[in-house]
Length: 86
Figure 1 (cartoon, rainbow, N blue to C red):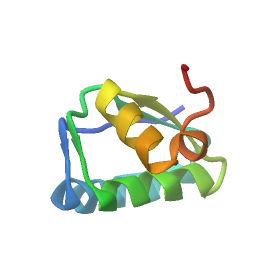
Figure 2 (figure 1 turned 60 degrees about the vertical axis):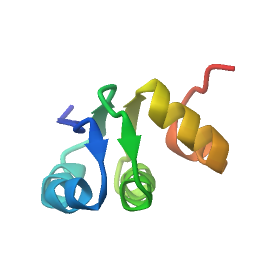
Figure 3 (figure 1 turned 45 degrees about the horizontal axis):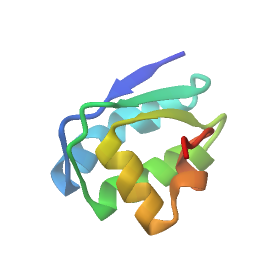
């Protein structure tokens, strides 16, 4: 299972830099996205993560507390994560 590690700052620039790698790896089975170091997350990266979950065989996202909190506030937790801790 291929893995992509997100940087601590997941802004537009990070999303643009990771897009080619995500596109290339999404066709190779379920993609693991290690977002445990994420301390800032922007809208573009959130859109990229939703797209990764919906594309091909999908993706498993390992969230940081920041990503989990942001996703919950925006109503995206069920969309992004297989299991959400209450």
